[in-house]
Image 1 (tube, one colour):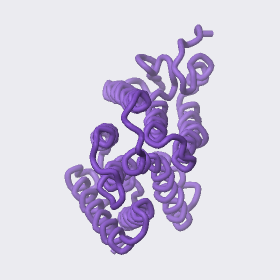
Image 2 (cartoon, rainbow, N blue to C red; image 1 turned 180 degrees about the horizontal axis):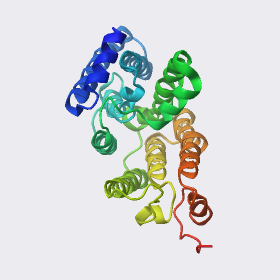
Image 3 (cartoon, one colour; image 1 turned 45 degrees about the vertical axis):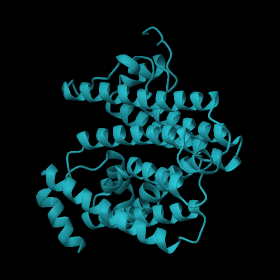
Image 4 (cartoon, one colour; image 1 turned 90 degrees about the horizontal axis):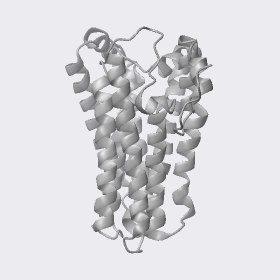
Length: 305
């Protein structure tokens, strides 16, 4: 099966329509796997049901990644799974049902999901493309070792961290009893600010790339003039906003605050350093940008040396 799939990927990789069709098939299979698992675990707590279904769907996507030799099958999962889990928390047994807070939170999660998924889709060239980080890991781990790395680090770990990031949605959507108040407004502001940061940063980056600049050119306008990683800042703000909704609905619930710090740690400890190292290796002038421009938090740049 894997050999046949690899042949399809090799022959049709440049055909985006067929590539997206395979992505659709993979995610339909993952949805079925999640539903079957959810039914099988139906007598457990809704959070446990969601986690089991999430793992089953992740394994289904990994099967396609392995069969086609391309871990980019997982790329959209980061943004596709959260709204489904949020909706499950709203309708799950024992939840509070649908109210203004539920509508607000789910709408923000869906907005984030649609924007991020669209941003991925418009930039994905097909099965001939694989994220540079995956390629780097493949080169370092070797053919056999890479798939263990892919399963654990590229599929399993992001699923686990995103699920931790979604834990605040249970108090916010299902169990919290506090009335809607100003804390919800603050949480919504932080969450929406995160989506806005990502929107403007990603759009500016896309326009910059489509302009076909010189190979060593560096984007230094808009949000990118004040921060070297405004898109990552937006993503971190989004997850912090979800945690704040939990506090607004139910006060401090310790396990609802596991995800936001994990997200921040992942971006600051892994994603951003990898990106910074790549930029410095490919663009020596980036060292001057590192000296002048803030890593994450926007602030006026220093004078050029």
